[in-house]
Amino acid sequence: MATTDKQAAYTVNDKVLEVDLTGQDIVWEKDRHGEKLMFQMYEGVRCGCFIDPARVKNFQLRPEDIYFPGYLRTGGHWIWEMTCMLINGKAETITRFKDYLELSTVEDLDKQPSPRVLNCHSHLTQAPLDLKKKKCRVIFTMRDPKDVAVSLYKMHHGHRDAGGNVYNGTFEDFLQLFLEQRVNKNGIFEHVRDAEKYFQENPDVPVHYQLYEDTQKDPVAAVRAISDFLGLQRDDDLCRAIAEECHFSKMKEKKEAFAMKVDGANNLYGKGVSGEWRNWFTDAMLDDYYRVFEDQMKGSRFYERYNRHNDTQ
Image 1 (tube, rainbow, N blue to C red):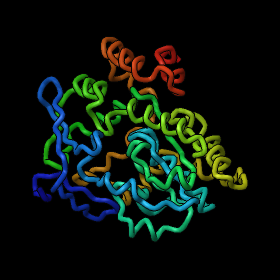
Image 2: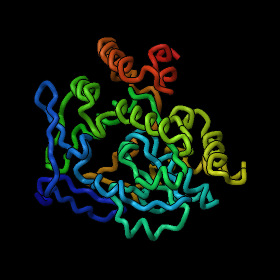
Image 3: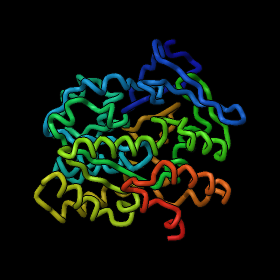
């Protein structure tokens, strides 16, 4: 099924993105009140219908490439911008959308000079086969899954998808889908555990974990940590300038022309805050959430950071 007037209009860098659903394994995930979300299935994983997840595995990496495989809404755009500025050696806005393996063409990516900073939300077990062979550096972003749930809900709610459907369900109903892992990439819990398994099996792949909350608390320290991970000569003045240039309000304004938009709306940048989940979760919803969290995240490197004990901190 090709693009119709009923489908959402997607633009990237202010250019229309053609969406063709032909051949996609389309699934509709319905919440308990019948509101639905549209995905394509690829190797058992739910994906957005405007991307091509099949192009990822055979993408040819360069040894200098930096790979960003974090889950959606975990600060990937933010850290991508910081990383690119560090590589460029200038605290200047990157005048394009991020280099996104599931969306950008191979031709466009091949034109980018090394080191490329390549983003992909696919599971790491679906990463380019070159990754473990060439041992590219990986920057893995993470965020409190409760805030991720809220951010994902805002991304879907009231917006058309590639099939023209608008999701108008409540957050409580969306949370049920989130906890049942019937959302994009099968949810953050599966995505994270898949990544941890990958890194355990491939210890030679260098990885830096960057937490959203830490970046927000001390952005200069975050830039310094990324600089050190990339093996760059430390320039504290540059790190401070990049942190300032990547302040959320500045990025939201300066990246507007290069963002991916749906029906003209840029929903990539929300409020840029932590702890907003407190305005959305009831006590009963938290009980439901933590039953799943305990089951899915026990043993994860992120368990202690995001368990219930930290809700009061």
